[in-house]
Amino acid sequence: MAEYRIDDLARAAGSTVRNIRAYQDRGLLPPPRLAGRVGLYDDSHLARLRLIGQLLGRGYTFAVIKDLLTAWETGKDVGDVLGLEKVLTDPWSDEIPGTVAYDELVAIFGTGLDEAERERMRERTVALGLIEPDGDKFRVPSPRLLHVGAELVAAGIPLDAVLDIAEKIRGDVDVIAGRFVGLVQEHVFARLEDQPGGEEVTEVAAVVRRMRPLVKMVVDPLIARAMEARVQAALGEHLETIRDHLAGDDRPAAG
Image 1 (cartoon, rainbow, N blue to C red):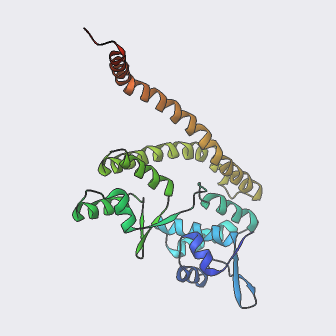
Image 2 (cartoon, rainbow, N blue to C red):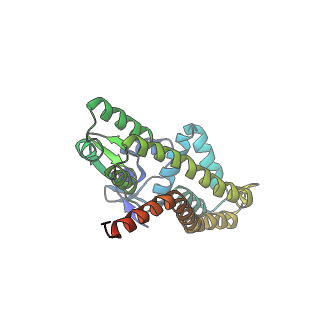
């Protein structure tokens, strides 16, 4: 497994060194392996740290999280438990977050907008989670999405309209994700009830791991076919008009 110093671990988990030390003090995070005077963490710490962050985000208290982690580990192989934690909390994308300065955002998206409009757009983009304030810059969780937005704006689509569609698509994909998770929750996660053993935990982790490529294999062709049908329906009449116009230009002039 990879090894991390405490600041590297905090960066990889989207946390802080202060939080990591607080979790250790509360018994939520195992201590690191010591190499001389340097503490080294591994992927199991990263998985646990991500899980703690998610549980805190859902409103669980430190006490409840500690009880939950203890219950999971009691009577089970710790490796199986950490393996399930890792597969449940690992990112579903291999995309590496980036950073961008405010001046760069203005140059890409803010041309022609006054300062009040730029501020409104900035706040809206932050609210959508497309950028996150990070000191004097902004963290970009998905540079690909930022690139798509830049291309749409460059094509002449107003930034407000781009953010409108981003918000709607986010809701659409949340519904799709909910359908997949509901399917697996009903037919797979139920095996974790009634104090499962290591074999069940490993099996469920394997199913979740296999879902990652399967979801893309389902969504990619479906969205491609839907886009093909929609584009043909929406642009069919326009293409016909263009063909008629070009055909007219090719006709010899009268007289």
